[in-house]
Image 1 (spheres, rainbow, N blue to C red):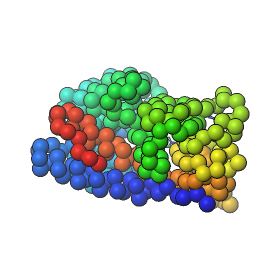
Image 2 (cartoon, protein in one colour; image 1 turned 45 degrees about the horizontal axis):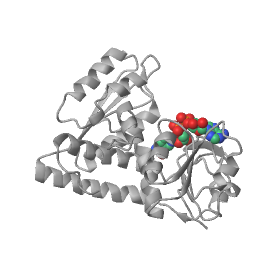
Image 3 (cartoon, protein in one colour; image 1 turned 120 degrees about the vertical axis):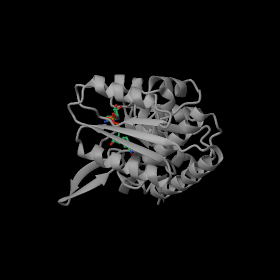
Image 4 (tube, rainbow, N blue to C red; image 1 turned 135 degrees about the vertical axis):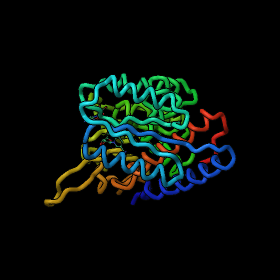
Length: 292
Ligand code: NAD
């Protein structure tokens, strides 16, 4: 049976280290990292997510600001708020919660955020820096996936990694991070031919598809590490249940290690957001980023 990769415990440990780093920055440099989160509209899932971000930001000792705007906010007003936050020296990280209402151009919003404060890592400058091997703020969920893979496997050099999914949020950035870790990276997607055969060659599988339990145990190379990014709500036996993109029951029989859903990649995302905010604050202030 595969070893379970406990993302919840790893994220808790990371938050403790972030808290210690923040305390050190306060005393040594009078620097309190600050994160501003902007939510437009009333999407219930986004509201829960934003509240969790704010809670965890405060818990590690950082400043937190929440800007809740009505769904009918104009694009111009949202861009004006982002510009105000760009110019506020106490704000080191800016996150505009996606999705924004349809009348707002999300790419325009993301690219208005100062790249130095872009803790979501979605600005084209950070995406370009990542893909050219330069220092960058990198998207949070992909960062969390690679932290868990390295925690489990150590050095990833030379491993065959298969990423399933090519979104800008997960698939593409996680592939870039794995390339930077010297993996041989294959990106599979909805138009790939014979996906099971592609996955069978992988020492490391990152599934970011959004299709419940799509990846089966007989696709997995014995002993491979499986990182399941998917969060899918399904009905089973008359009850609601969260499942990943991998069929956990069959995959855990073959894999060497696997992340559960929930409790795997999910808890890493906010922890990595806090991690990015500390990194952004240190870079803006010109101090060395502490170990975290
Ligand atoms: P997306 O819909 O933007 O992208 C899905 C990708 O999967 C696409 O690139 C598509 O080509 C590929 N795909 C679709 N069907 C396929 C198939 N049959 N075979 C192979 N590839 C296929 O989704 P996303 O934003 O990248 O998210 C993926 C999953 O990860 C979702 O379940 C989402 O909820 C989850 N997610 C979790 C976190 C977290 O843990 N915090 C964060 C982001 C996304």
